[in-house]
Length: 285
Ligand SMILES: [Zn+2]
Image 1 (cartoon, rainbow, N blue to C red):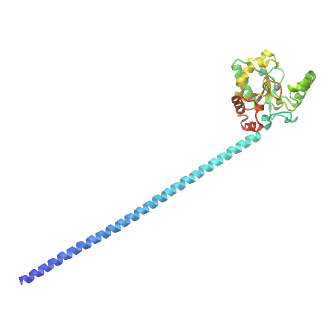
Image 2 (cartoon, rainbow, N blue to C red):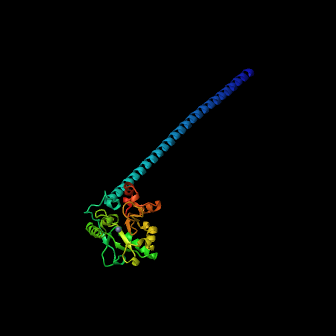
Image 3 (cartoon, rainbow, N blue to C red):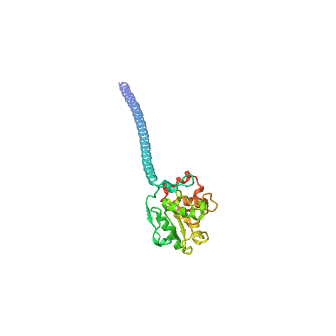
């Protein structure tokens, strides 16, 4: 009897232990599978996150690309505006002002500068005779005259703008006096740079309005060293093939071209017209 109870108890114990073990086994299994599920979920989240990050990066890249495109576009608009400005300036700039004149290319007899301005008396010689200069080029000439004065050099304007008819008269006087020899030192009417309004002849008080002897003056030396800063160049240097050497005759060609010529040791008539024309846009800068 007692043995029977012992076996029953043993049986129950075995059943309890077995059940417990099974429960533990089952529990562990459940835990493992929950862990698997969680791991899978984490992996899924991680991959979502990676995808989202990638999408974000792509969006950022797209945004940067868009911004670059916009910047490009604004730059293009600026370029176009700039080009329109340049074209506009070019259109308004008188191309004759940077032309080389020769016996085959000359100014039309009807040519007139757009606007001329009277040169103040204090800068003229003789002061009683009115002289004119191109209105837009005048401020540069005025600066030149004032700057020379600051350096103790007095320059005077003997002749500025000359119309076709004035030029004809000058030429006629020369022809009467010197005959055809005058061709080498007086431009035939029609291709005198004076008709542009941007060329002039300088003199000094010591010369009393004369041109002869100008080469020996300190005024001439000053001009060869400084005139380019104000956009002026010597048109007919020594040994040029156009006219005789005219140390008194200077032409306004704009600061950018004058500086280039000065630094390269060249003269206006040495250059190709094409290279000269590139400076048209900066003529009055
Ligand atoms: Zn002259």
